[in-house]
Image (cartoon, rainbow, N blue to C red):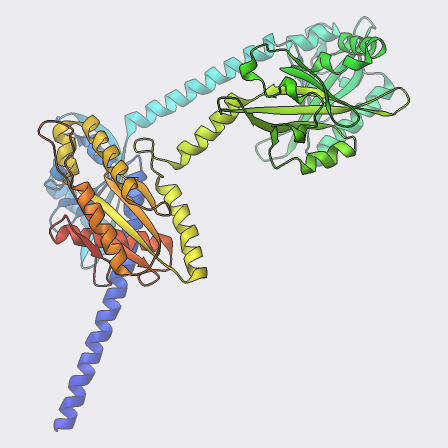
Amino acid sequence: MNTSRHSASSGARIRKRAAAKSAIATNRYDLKELRRFRAAMDMSEDSICLIDRATMRFIDMNATACRYYGYTRREFLRIGPQDLLVHSRADIERAYDQLIAAPDAAVSSEIIGRRKDGSHTLIEVSRRALRFDDRWIILSVAHDIAAREADRDRTTQALRASEEKYRRILENMEDAYYEVDLKGNLVFFNPAFIGMLGYPQSEVHGMNNRVFQPPDVAARVYKTFNDVYRTGVPAKAYDWEMRRMDGATVLVEGSVQLVKDAQNRPIGFRGMLRDVTSRRAMEHALRESEARFRSLIELSTDWYWELDAEFRFARVELKDTNHDSMTHADSDIGKRPWETEIEAEGGWEKHRELLTTHRSFHDLVTHRARPDGTPRYATITGEPIFDAGGTFQGYRGIGRDITTQKLSEQRIQYLATHDSLTDLPNRMLFNELLGIAVQAAQRQSHWLAVLFIDLDGFKAINDALGHEMGDRLLREIAGRLKQILRGSDVVARHGGDEFVVLLQDVSDADTVSAVARKILAVVNQPAALTEPAHRITTSIGISLFPTDAEGGSTLVQHADAAMYAAKEAGKNDFRFYSHKIKR
């Protein structure tokens, strides 16, 4: 009897432990899904709310909902949907119960909402019931119908304005624009097309483009159009002859591309034509009279340069007399480009190989430092020079200062990866650096730590002193954090009053604890924003690699959970992540 009773008791304990493990696993999964959903809520421009059916109170909402209805988050949590709608509580409860009866269904309807200031607004609401743990949650997603209609009107007006703008461009441009069907019949053209060929507008519509071309040209044009139809690749800058109504010949430079309908089926061609008769004649005259400058007539350039047959600078002619914009100097004469202070992107090796094969090159990006140390960037384009007998004489080309463009690109790239307020790396860059650090730690069997920092009471200071003072405090805290960390560590702004720190190659948990204490101390120093000076504390959560997680995103999530544990324990402290921590 005793043995049987002992076995039954052991079996019950085993079943309880199994059930507990299953519940923990389920809670972890639910927690992960809830965090994903919360992130999606915060990014949505719709008003999203979660309502506890049992209490008919809001349990969560996004910032859009707070702004739209005029309530703070704290106020929101004290009210229910009956406070935001003109319907009675009983009607709302019946609607929610119908959703619970069909949990897989989502119901949309137009209803009248009520803001905090008492104003009414027409909204479209989509609702569905979700089962979470042992209670029913109603998910409500709403957007303002008037705002949607206004957006639609603005889009329509913008489309009309765009159409009008491009119509005026086509009507006033000097180049001829045309559209033909697959048989080559003209279906649309601008006034410049009529002016180029001299036909009355009433006669041109529906005419086949072969009418304007001699037979040999028509065959060549047909082949070009056929290649475009077959490959889908536009043809650009090809020459052909066209006959005017008065019999005169016009040399045009044309382009053509395939036109497709909404089902991606070819329906015709469109293109541009430019009368280059005079230009071609001028080019021919220039080639005969002054071969040395035959390419300059078509180039818009900041300076002109020449290399001799040994690739040494023989000539540099600046069009811009402002030497601050120069990327070449008089001292370059007699030197090869790679013997000067000019640096080429990617190095000179490939460019030297290209020069020895006497090939043209375009937009080689170079840079050199000015006497004050500031960088100057330029693009260089060049072509080989041959004499009448075909002997290589050197190179000639143009250079263009692109410093402003280059610095703007660098600034844009920097702003995309850094927080504009604190100048710290932003969340995107931190996650990228964390991923690289995790891979390195895996290869080298090193430890690393992620510290999730949240300022205690920041909202109160921000509300009391204003956003400008709040921003100053965030900048000051960011500066303090940078001062106490190593060069190999990374501190980033995670969002709001939250920061994250990556400690690389840490030896043990005590080392991380020491850093956490430094952070607590440095944040707690008085901030002289006003008189008297303000003090602020912080709560820190810590997760370690590889003991707590093996992925960067999980490390951040665990550190975040540990930070909340530190807050619940009284704030102004740090906590290491443990599997017992739940959020």
